[in-house]
Image (cartoon, rainbow, N blue to C red; front, side):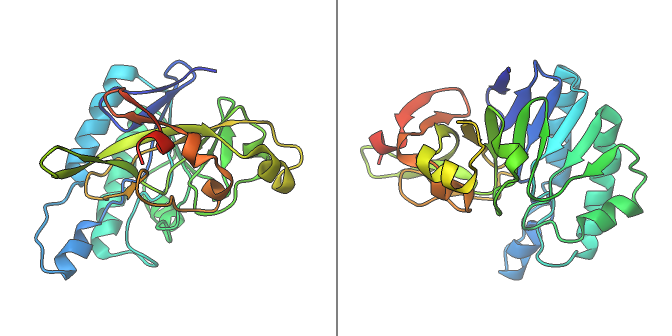
Amino acid sequence: MMIQPVVDEPVLLVDDGRILVVADLHIGIENDFKEHGLCVPSQTMDMTIRLLSLFRKYRPREIVLLGDVKHNIPSLTSQERVDVKRFFETIQRYGVVHVLPGNHDGGIKKIVSMSSTSKVMVHPSDGFVIGGVGFVHGHRWPSSEVMGCEYVVVAHTHPTVMLRDRMGYMAFEPCWLKGRFFLNQLRRRYPDAADPYVVVMPAFNPLCGGIAVNKEQLLGPIVRIMDVENAEVYLLDGSCLGRVRDIR
């Protein structure tokens, strides 16, 4: 099975590019900044343009939105209704769209039902399998079917790595994690599971922030049984920084 991150983008290609995967768009996150007195332009159009460019370049037949398409919890803001509906109607022109609801996606089925989105499918939040790869957002335990795959792709935790220069200046860069589960803990919960690789995706929305993997604990139940310390860390440009434990 071919599974390949896109260089310089938090986007994954699966099955020789037939499937394009993106996670954590958090459309409407700007409303949070506004409530704290910060005026931040909407990222929805910029993210849509970035994705359309990737669709035209790689020509996927299927598009996976790996959770947290929208941001507000638990309901929908009026702006989200407009922006998410328009987003779905735009991207479905480029392939079948699979939505895996995340913890921020309350009301996402309602938006899909209100839209002219015949090519948008909403899956159960415990994950689904496509192209031989298991996908789950990461805020709840995956299904047994997902854990039976060779690769399990997870989002939710917005992994970053904290870098510090000689002057003490800190910068946080989005990153990928690739590792394994603790096999004994995995089999305790999923007796029939394979021994899959787990890939943790960075967030697509640059306003999301994230968890610094070399300083903090990752979020979500699935990473509790992941051997995070021995997971490999990759920047978006493909640079391998070694294992998490090497950059603590």
